[in-house]
Image (cartoon, rainbow over the protein chains, first blue to last red):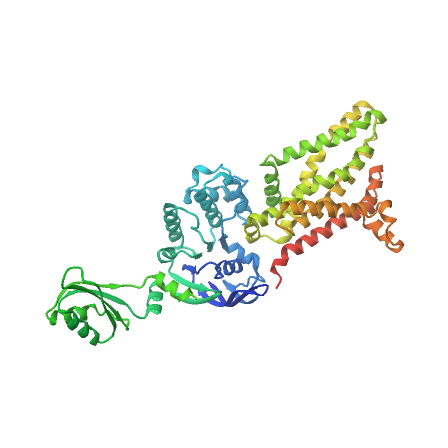
Length: 310
Length: 238
């Protein structure tokens, strides 16, 4: 559906996006993740035909934004960064204006606007002036504008920025529902958002793609080793030595005892294998007492900071 | 075509949804009526020549105030990104904004019809001349609007847009004044005389509507609207 190859954008001498390539299939919810200034917004602006790429190619449904800008823009619903709105209009005026600009036939405008307002929970704010709405409601107006003409592709630039936790949950649920029928691209620097809403993540740093895949794939790809923590009662030195000799174990660290004789050991394993079962047998076979065993999974947060720290 | 209508409606709404439009019209009417009627009863002639010779200077400050927000505000609040990612062509947006400003000007001029009506009650003015005057004034005003609209597209700041528009319109107005022409090398004089807005307005204020003057105003308007479209498109140049 969307194919981007070697996309590059310069702002003057500043390189904002550097040879980015990715593909998005119909019905996917893709998150662009990256620290501020990583080039997320610039990529979205190029996808919406607002800015031209310096080089590289974008194809949306086989159409090129430089030649078929209008045809592409008809397919898109766009929520720009910081949710700009015509604040002196009422909600109704704004949405009908948007519907007319999207060439909705005039007999369908009323019902389309009403339906969208209901979906976005704005039914009783129809005649409020946008400038007087709260931030969360404004965000919904922005989303309503993007959804109104039932576009195939939704491009949302930081859809939950500035909202309170309840509103964030609402917006995420809405995005998930929408993702069942539409292709959604959203940008964010909030990690849980990606884990919850997206099928696929593209992590950007300084204009380059540093990783992409499903959240689970990414965790595997970048960590390479996992941590297991054990609580064992038994002779300390013997246990440490024996654990160190086990295959795939890289590092063993003994922590302070909680109660006399009961120590916590942190083990780092090299391979992407689950050693828990092996470890349990190993310990029991030696006649030591195992109180606790747990494997720590690398969070997307670890992945993110590992990839984007420089 | 219906995009044009939608944009015009959107811009007119922005004027009339806020008190700006009403304050603006009231201030305009008070100022022009007072300046005109101050000397009207002294001269006691049933004509509006003095009224129309005032307007180029009144317009100089009032019309840039209409156009200053049209692009600058969209740029400042980033709604430009919404506007230009709607499936609409650049020229439709430029023309729509211009037509909205022009309609606003027509509304203002229509509100000033009280002046010819009062004069018609007091004496027997030549209504044909007055109508011609109105048409000519509309063309002069439209030229100011086209200039102001273009300059608004160059900045994010409305005040800057206003001041530059006043200065540039003033410059275009005075370059054909005799006072200014004296200081210009003689071979440039015909050019300045032709390009200046005021030279073409003098005959209109006298009540003569010449097709050459109308053609001149139309070219000024198209020239600045063209520059404006190029300016909006320029973000897409590589």
